[in-house]
Picture 1 (cartoon, rainbow, N blue to C red):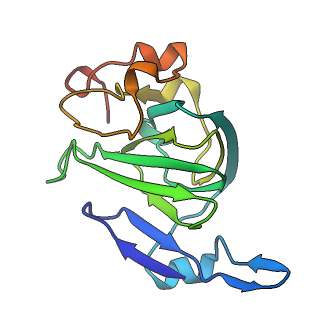
Picture 2 (spheres, one colour):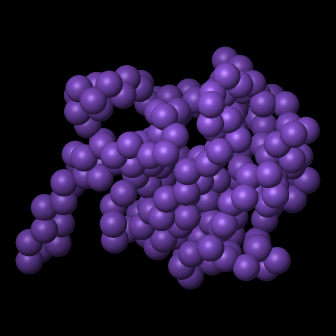
Amino acid sequence: MKIIDTAIKDVFIIEPRVFKDERGYFFESYNQAAFKDAGLNYDFIQDNQSQSVYGTIRGLHFQKGEFSQAKLVRVLEGTVLDVAVDLRPDSPTFGKHVAVELSAENNRQLMIPRQFAHGFAVLTPRATFAYKCDNVYNKASEGGIRFDDPALGIDWKIDISKAILSEKDKVLPLLENAQCF
């Protein structure tokens, strides 16, 4: 397993070792010992999965307070642009983001620590997205920021005027008005 630094401290791209032969492929998508050896001490307790169509943007979401969540995200089918926005109040990269293309072909994963907003855009006709969380979801602790906040400057790699959004995501506040952490 290869762990790659990104432009933001504590956000990592995870590349598994993929073993291919005439039958197909095999890889470990998660190995707790390997993570701990790399200093990534997470205790994942919940797995989630979603499927979306091209042009869908989910996010940018986060959990606050005692229900804050770290996530290890990956794509099982298709391709997404995955985005993590630093919301740590004392971070020198507060409000900055990392955007990584994750796909079923490249098998890359993104490790997102707590106090980050997270979202993704579907770049293929369909994508199946899976992620591990180190804390349970709590509706009262959810928060979010607008995916198209000009202060964030995220290029979602799709025509955002045609983006498919949930009703909840359409009314999220800009970062400057969000109640983060």
